[in-house]
Image 1: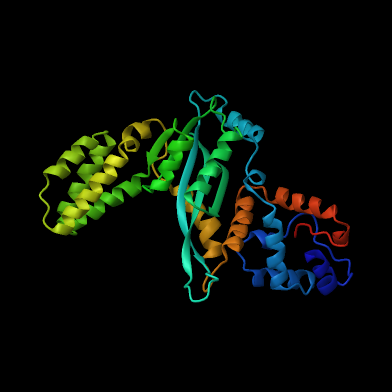
Image 2: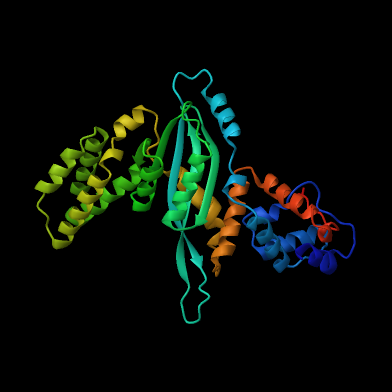
Length: 346
């Protein structure tokens, strides 16, 4: 239907075709209006933003995670290339985080809202380089996120005999509950900067914005680097809180540190070459999710937002050409669409 519409309304048998691969505008940060303007300026199609919107949705609706992440064979080849002549196995890092997306509520009288985009990024890390492997971001709940990790595990994507497995994230419960269920045997790392922020938050409430607060935070961080979380907890217990707010903040910090005790041995982690910060997933949130979904005045249906996220993940995983070729292969089997073939814009 979509291609018939394009052929009859915009191309009019002109014979113009997009050459060699998928339109870049479908996978970029441009809006549908900007993408349509780009196509019209270059190719004089008269294509509408609505058509670009539907084309993007049609392509993305056929995509799931398996199409846009490397195969087990591809991953093993990458790992072997990196680990050759290395005395220590590279680290296979999973980083997970959530990002908020503006969602349009269709129900009458119900205000628009924000939904969490749960994302995971996989990359290889050794002393010399960081090699991106894949990203997958979708508006989903905890169970759906767990299914993504379970799929990765069941497909045998991680060559456990060739890598050291690590998972890094902030203090969100949904991350660690899922990791513990799916990958119970892996090195878990609490993002150092997230942990430090909790220390700063308590110190500012207890001591104020002064030198005493900074000194307390630095002493606590030194203890954590030397795996002396017990010393930090004892110090917190002996500390006389100045206000009820500080007492409440202390209880929150104590619970946070106890809940993440096994993930905080930063000195040992650093010596082992493990990452201490989750900047990789923060960066993925920005260039996959925020730059496209968080635009002025934009409110998304969940399905449309997830379709855009699929295409953007495919782009940054270097799998978009494969996705579009799969789309073309399906359409070539349908005679009514044979009049038009979309290829990459150069």
